[in-house]
Image 1: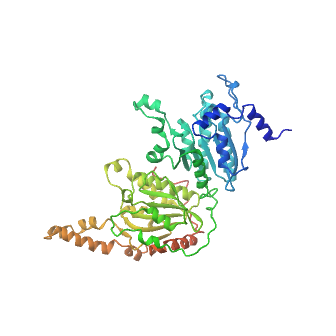
Image 2: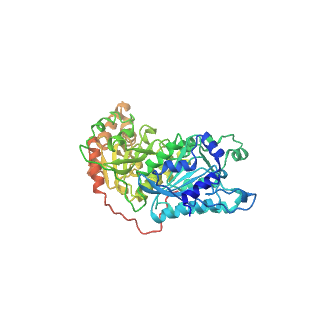
Image 3: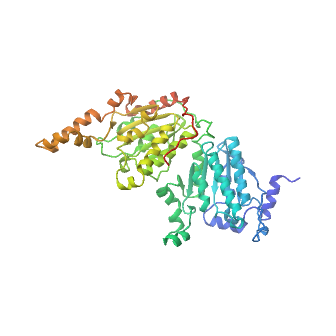
Length: 513
């Protein structure tokens, strides 16, 4: 009896595995790897076990009975990545353009079901022209079967989508419901309706790249979390991302070996500028706090007034949310609130402790923000952090003004530990604006209003724009020297490692979507 490997080799020679050498060559000419090459590069060498390699489609219409390829345009199976079990499916563009059929969908659903049963991540390598139109509603039903499993798997196992070619129409909704989406520059795109339909309906001339390329979705829409210059880099990013994430919602974050030493970081002492209006790069603070070269930023090019990503602290994976003074002075707006809220909910799903670094002057004002829903969108971040039950620690580095102070993981919404640097300013608003309101009459009656305003501004700043009043009330647990931050955080997260917090019994909350 022939082995599985021998049968597969014969099918490949017969040209029934994949779309044939010409189509594979065409794939390479476009700078793209084949589906099988992608799987081999993603998984640990020799670990991949294919499922359903001999499946063929069932369509007898439109001459399809004469066009059958084993595997039916998708490679599915399981293996390990860095020694940990992962399920994968990779759509094969050389077979009917990777179009999804009933059996194609069944293969994907099978590995998704297995992943749920065994508690392991699913990685989808998407490269498909869409539904196989020869199958009509059966292909549409296949998409819906996948969508349903995306939703049932959400928050149970990590789901990662790598867009490595076209992804259009209904196909885009599966990646949208997974936890992270990656795209390859210049060879991948995502959109609900393509350029031709856009031209017909709106009379806009737009290319596929402009409409739904990696750059568009990583900077404008926020659909894409990470981009890569080629297929190989994309697969390496998937592997790196998985290294920070537990296998499932019952698992703990991965930990790499780390020996504690002198955890003081003197470089943190010089980051905050003397002027409160001068920006600085919050990434420098993150680098000073986390283990060397461990920060892995997510959504880097979208809503850059807030920074989110994974890092390691004494070897243990944590999630970081940080205002970025280098962009819009670090204010919260619609996009940054959504970005941080989504990241918060992912970390909470998978037991990843959260560190929130605060330097926020408030919410971004303006008609554009108000008319587009800053109220409900800002509330998403407030809701997500309030609901999170993972260990949560806040460090206020400089400004924490108004409602944004509350939203950014304050003690009042359930943060476990709140630290502040001596440079922290915790108040309803900035000293200048507050003085203009509180001392309005005195300033107006003064022979030198400008001088009087400056005096009152200094008076207000000395009294209120410090962390000490908040510390006196217990809203700040400790005012710490910047250089001691890493040491304090290592101890605090270790103390919180066995934290147990349960939400009130309910079906689910109603987040302001």
